[in-house]
Image 1 (cartoon, rainbow, N blue to C red):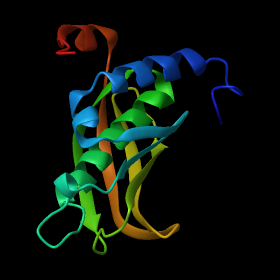
Image 2: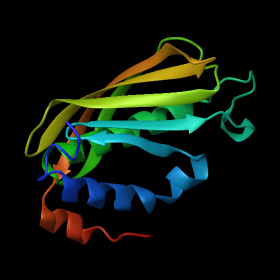
Image 3: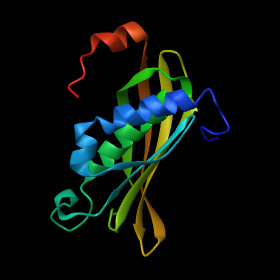
Length: 154
């Protein structure tokens, strides 16, 4: 469901896009928020030498970052609360070689205190996606008071 079909989601989407736009690491990595709907988030990054490990594959840390950020963003879209990663389990399924790395996260179980979010990561080569990683995350949902106590560096 897009923000156009869910008018209550439009202000949430705007706030999340603004917050993501202030994340220095997103800019540093060159990642983009390519899709955002209630309960889902898609992040992507293009291949650059700085993101590769010694064999020319996307570094596992890039995959982990996309999972960490996409699952947290997806959780935040489900209810509009701020969120922080509590933990995630990442399975690297195959070498991340390709022109682009895409992470699609979706909320499995929203919650007031903890949301459970799944993510799948794909590498794109010549327009074909290959599943390279999967993850399951527990995302801590922050109430307004807790979120306000965390200073933003941006």
